[in-house]
Length: 311
Image (cartoon, rainbow, N blue to C red; front, side, top):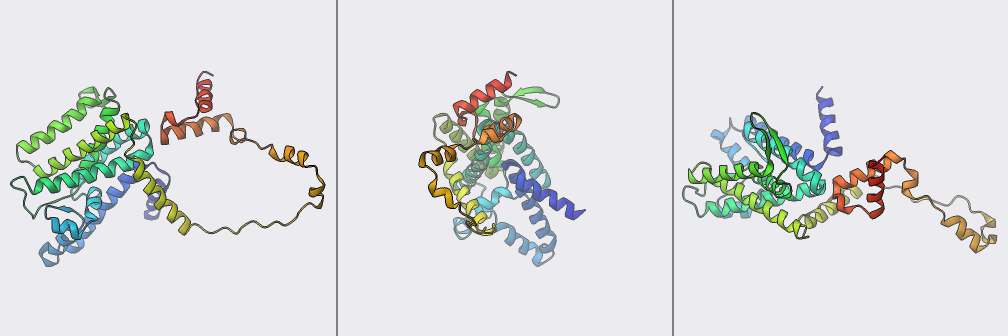
C-alpha cells in the first residue's frame, strides 16, 4: 500500500502542474517537522527540536538570518499546525488555479517565491520595529506567499465569481478585501502581529507583480530563467548519455544525382502539424495557452483554434 501511495505522489510531482508540486512540498515540510517533533522533543527538554526547527524559520534576530540565509526560502514551505497547513493549501489551490489558468502555470512558482520572500523580509523588519516582537520570535508558513497569489488573482480577474458555502457566488475582489481587512484587524488587536505584517508584505508583492504584468514587465521571467537553468543542469546530469549516431551506409550514386533534384527531394519535410491529428493539434494549442497564455499563440494557431471552435 505504501509503495503505491509513494508511486502516486511521485507521478503527481513529475507530471502535475506547478501548483500541485508546491502543495506536495508543503505537505512534505509539515510531515518532516512532525517527525522531528516526535523524535527530538523527548530529548533535551524540547531544545533539540527547537534548535532544528528554528534553523529553518525566519527569525527576528539578524544574526540568525545571516548565519541561516536559506530560511527566507525554507520558511514558506513549513507548517507546524495542521489547520495552518490545511487552510493555506486550500486557499493556494483555489486561487492558484485561477492564476495558473489566466497567466500561465510557469508564473505560479516565481509568484509564490517572491511573495513569500517579501513576507519574510517585512516580518523581519517589523519585528525590529514593533513592540512585543522580540529577538526570540520566528516565523514560518505559506500565508504570505498565498496572499501574494490571492492578490494577483484579484487584480487580474476582480469580477471572477467564487462559490462559497452559505454566501453563494462572491466576486474575487471582495474575498481579497476580506483577507486584507482580517490582517489589519489582527495588527490592531495585537493578534499574531508579526504574521499579519508578513501577510501584508506578501500581498504588497502580489500587487506589484500584477501591476508590472499589466505594464508589460514580467517580474517572474528572471526566476523562470534560473529555474530552467537548474532543471536543465540536473536533466543533463542524470539523463543517460546516448551514443552519437554512426553512418552505416552511404549511397555511392548520391554524388551522381543532380544538385537541383537532390535539393528538391530533400527540402520536402512534413511540418509538425501534419504529423498530428486534428484533436492532437487542439490539445497542443490548449497546453500552450495553459503554460504561456493565449497571447503567446501565433496567428496561424489562433486561426486554427477559432476554426475548430466553430465546427
